[in-house]
Image (tube, rainbow, N blue to C red):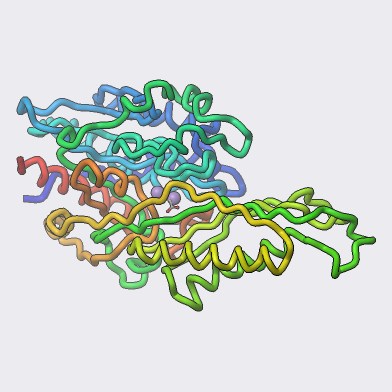
Length: 413
Ligand code: GLV
Ligand code: MN
Ligand code: MN
């Protein structure tokens, strides 16, 4: 039997309202730990309380909204995502999963439906890892899989995690208490926009996610020698930007020409001293490789390091490569995929099975519970951009499937 109808208008209003917090002419700027993020979190907690959830913040800054179930002793079913955005991002990435979850809870409350299992809405801290370069931070904390480097890192403004967490109600000294034990949650479901072109191209309303990509990310620093741009002969230069450029091109080649891994990106570069009349002395840049196969990521890293050694030798520069904690690919169990397909069929919504090229909190949560992900189409496959858009109907379809999915899961043990 299909679940009660969610209120599509209300859901889309919630998305619009949240989308005003951090909106600028250059897109969404609700980067984790920013003033906009703090405002978005307060707004979201307010909505959660209005649907009757008991709201707490764990030491990792994750927002947890809980509602009791009718049968004592059952583990909670969790729904969630994130509300932080990349710089100049869109208003659907993450936000749909959170506003969709709140809409499901509101619908249950309106219909006076109590589930057997307790329910939780989870809003994870710093999923994007752009403000503070350690992504899936909150979900990895909840899964107990933070690495030592996650805790000692400082962000681009030189501010450490302790201060950042304090600003959002977290507490670094108790971070390990954010970990939930396996068995505490009976499942985690995440609704998300696809962020790629497959569903939009095929005209399929619902994507059943089969697995989530892994990511190997690095901070690279090339040190050359700053010198006068007018007096230093070309043959005597150690131009860090030229050497970095050669390496940036190898990242592209590793993924496209050599096809060692699915994608490779350099998304951030900073040049020092960054002046017109100075030969660049140092350049720092980010590198990330993604693939659903861990071996492909290892091979991409090895090829990149080999290229870096070549550039060091040929250009007389030094290249320092620091690996960030890797994110392992997370396959989604076939029975969880089938549950999403069943929930969609209950509403006559066609499905397509597809892997996720983006990272998600669900992949961290997969370490402690069964996860499922529902995708809805992204128009023209655009995301991490102000042009990111999913239609009101697509968002509503996704939330409807999320509600059905949770009710189906509630019938299970
Ligand atoms: C997260 O959104 C990512 O895949 O970069
Ligand atoms: Mn994102
Ligand atoms: Mn996201």
